[in-house]
Image 1 (cartoon, rainbow, N blue to C red):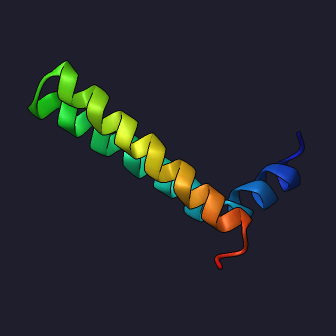
Image 2: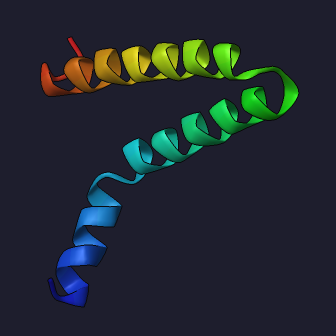
Length: 62
């Protein structure tokens, strides 16, 4: 991939990329504060919310 393709991809999906990074950081914060069970629950909820958000965006935000 050329630099321009990578740049266009990042700018096109910057909100989604930041959302995924934020959810990962929240999950690791829960893991650091609590135990592995809470980490798995938080990760599952994050993935579900991300799936709903992506579905919402694909439908055009309606």
